Image (cartoon, rainbow, N blue to C red; front, side, top):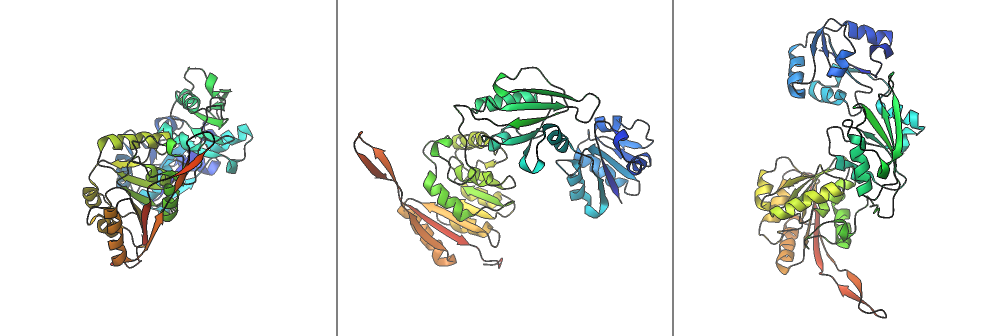
Length: 406
């Protein structure tokens, strides 16, 4: 079985090399979106679009393994495209990809921007709130649109976040005969709908109300909506340093409260993921709002008792943070047992009962105990500055040995 994936532009088969065109003409099975298939009206082949869903269409491809299968895709099929999906299903040795200049390359060419210096964000099939993670003054963003309403929605989000002066360029039908460009400023962007096939170039400019947020650990406490159940900024920074997120890793945040630890974990790298475990329904809803506001709407939220969740969630995390329920007997051991070998367990306690549980697990599995004491200044009067001690936090940190039975 060999699947050939051919990237095409808005000019369709006309933009292909003679060899790529010959592969399309010789296809026995031709697959693509409706727009792609319409650009190859004369190709005599069995045709499928993706309307049945990816899994069903991939099953049909597998049933025709002895046929010459060609898949048409936009631009570079391995850049937010179908190429990666096909390789995951059938293997790299069964998929041959012929890319064309993609929309990102074309957009940067039109803008005169260096591709390595831009951040690409997709809202095609993904939440608009992903954009919140990247809003910093001076940032250049290429945004892959969902449809013709996306430019208006992006302009409204930028304005609401204090980035109303940001410059927006909408590029329509890139590479085609009907290519068009529209420039403007977010806070004055018109309400009309643009062409369905468009891509946006943003130059972020912060207004007076903009609150840019660092990607480093320790966001201000007021960046989160909370009811007091929040790992405070200074302790949070130490906690994230101990959790030590790496690209692609998974965190389980047990007793998540406002979700601050799992949200900051995911902000470190877009390939990081997390599950926030919080049994209180109101707090779980608050976590979701915080995740959207801070640009990580992919955060998974499990509204369940911590003990039940640690039994029922599938997979094994790279790190577990226990911030709530530390004093529950046996909970830390459950978390330890679910960790991958080499994974990190970090737990914080402010009560004597919680600290006692931390000492117990240290005696069994080793690790390190520290205490974190923070005093914040309180200006009681104009002339006197006092420091008010926050609750001392006892923190446990351990790395699970690589031997899986440890």
